[in-house]
Image 1: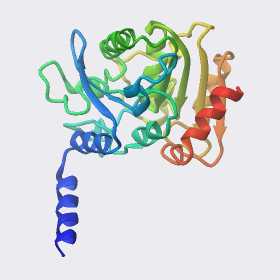
Image 2: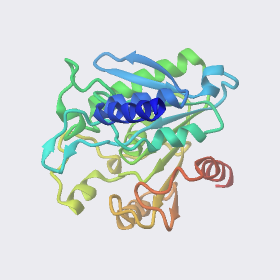
Image 3: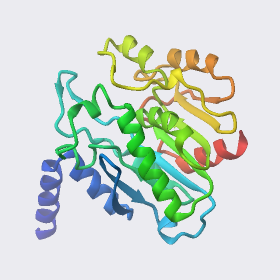
Length: 269
C-alpha cells in the first residue's frame, strides 16, 4: 500500500511541476549530465549523454536543438514557461550511439523569468539575432573546451530553424540534420494565419556553405510543417537531401527507431 501511495504522490508532484521542472527531471532520470553555461546575454542549460561524459571519442559530437515548445497557451495567451511539454528530443538523444549534447535555448528550461529574458524571445523574436548569437557563442565555447572536431547539428521543429541559422557561425560543422523543421517562417506564418515573426531571422533568406551537408526529414502527415512548404523550400535548395517519412506527422514517430534513422541518413546519403 505504501508503494501505491508513493507512486500516486510522485505522480501528483510531477503533474504540478512547471514544464521546465518536468523537462529537467526527465533529463536527469535519463542519465544526462546537466551544466549551465552563459553567453554575454543569456543563460543556457546543456545536457550531455554518457558518451560525451566519458569523452570516448572527440572526433564527432551531435548537438541537439529542441523545438519552440509552447510559446502560446491556446494560441491566445503568451505562456510563462515555453519549455517543451513533449520530451521527444530527450528520447531521441537517449538513443544516439555517439557523443551528444542538447543545447537549451535562451529563456527556456527554467530561465524564462530571468532578468535578461522577455517573452518576445519565445514569440516574435524566437529566431532573432540575439537568440542565434547567444546559442552560437556558448556552443563554440563548449566545442573548443572539449576539443570536438566534427559537429553535426540536429534540430527538431523550431530547433531545425535555429540549426540552419547557426550553422555558418559554428566551428567545424560538417552536417545539419533537421526533423519536421520550419525552414521558411514567412510561408509558415501565412499558412497558419499566425502573426508574422517580425523580430526573427528566416532561414529561407540564407544559404549554407556548400561544404556543409544538409538532410531535412519531414513527415507525410505533418500538419504543422506540411509537405507543400517543404517542397517549396526543396526547389530552392538543390544541395540538400529531403527525406520523406510517409506515415509520420510532426510528433510521431521520430523516436520509434531514432538510432536506426540516424545511422541510415548519415551513412547512406
